[in-house]
Length: 178
Image (cartoon, rainbow, N blue to C red; front, side):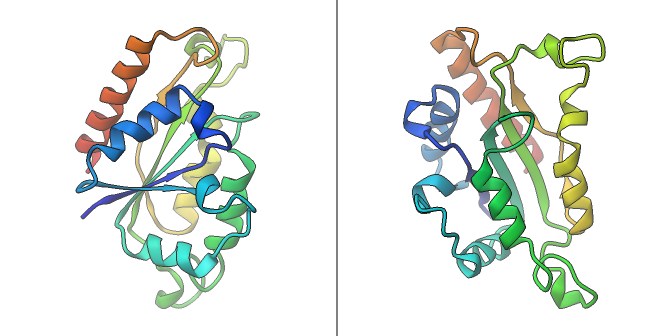
């Protein structure tokens, strides 16, 4: 079964990292279904039923986004609030928990260097801690959280070769966790 990659980048055309990752994914349509929220919903009016049907059709979901203000871009947060609602992702009855046992992870690019995300670094917390809300959301909806894929330093002149290498590493990460 294909992995659903939900891309949430407000300006994917100008992104070096997320655009390159998405291009790498697009070369393997038999393995990955790429769904770009900002392209599908430029008006930010999310079709909840459509999104829930996409989730139901996939057992593995990856949320791919640039790390904005130590969180996700706003459309992804809105998507979570609307799509993972009571009666679909949570609720007292088994039919209310349609995300149960799905495997979910994130693929995140940051502008900040990796060493800044350390206990003694500039921002004091490692990425695992900063991504904890995503992990907790998965646990709340009874999905299985998988380790994150991250690339740091996008604002610090990563070379094209480094970005290409990250795209290759991303595909290997997806294959290993499949």
